[in-house]
Each structure stands twice: as C-alpha cells, then as structure tokens.
Length: 193
Image (cartoon, rainbow, N blue to C red; front, side, top):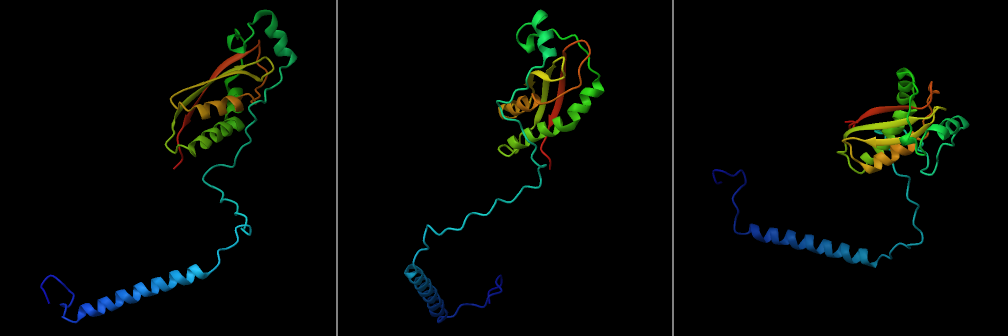
C-alpha cells in the first residue's frame, strides 16, 4: 500500500477484470437499445389529456379584475355638475368637494387593496424581483364613482399600471360633499417571502 491511499495496490491481472466489466456493461446497453427499438411507438392519437396544473398557494385567491372595456356609466349627478362649469375631461375638472379620509381609507383597505395586490402579483409571476412604490391619483365624481385615474411611481411597470387603472374604475366611494374630490393613494409593492 502506498502511504496516502486506502486502496490496495493494483496487480498485473487486475486490468483484465476491469476490461471484462466494461464489455459486459457495453453489451447490456446495446441489448437494451435493440430491444427498445423493436417495441412499437405508442399511437399519437391516444394521448391522455394533461392533468390540471397545480395551484399556487403562495398567492391569494384571484380576485376578479374587470374587463378593459368596462367603464362605469355616468350618473345624472355627475353629468349635471360637469356640464356647466367643468372642462370635458375629468382630469381637468376643478374639484372643490370633500370626502372624509376615513371613508376613503375604508374603500381602499377593502377590496380595492386586494385588487391592486392581484395586479401586482400577476406581474410578479413574470418578474419575481419587481418592487417599488406606486401612487394612484383619483378623481371621484359627485356620485362617488371614479372618473379619472392616474398612476405613477418607482414600480414603473406598465402591466401593473394598466391593471390598476382598470380596477380603479370599478371602485365606489361615498358621495362627496360639494362636488368631485381628488385624492392620491400610495401603495408599497414588495414580494412576499
């Protein structure tokens, strides 16, 4: 034995046993290949339907996101207050109404926050490092429906911004006092670990 090895030293006839083992392995591989080639291929028309993909439990259950074409119908109150003194676009309206901060918070912390989170998680599936802040600027009409939405922030993802604009159209706030209201809502988006 050599000093650094725990294996016994090789003898003159040991190489023939290694060669025999290699040839047996080679023969068994060739035999398997030829037997496998003799079997007919399965018929392509008799394929089993794929099973449903496993559900991902790390994300919250999907919340319904309204279709892109869905727009809230304008109420008579909004049309009446908009025509005489306001420009045509809700973003340009001069809003002097008031709405209690607690009422805004109640709407935002309800289904609205879950909808925004769903928009973010959909984009997170494509980019798992997506994170940042987002501010949603809302113009709330006299009836309490959202009339204009603007989204900006460091998140800087057009897919999330488009989805948030779409879901914000469906948010319903209490009727403001004195006409329309403008408010900004901050969101901090970070992936869950």
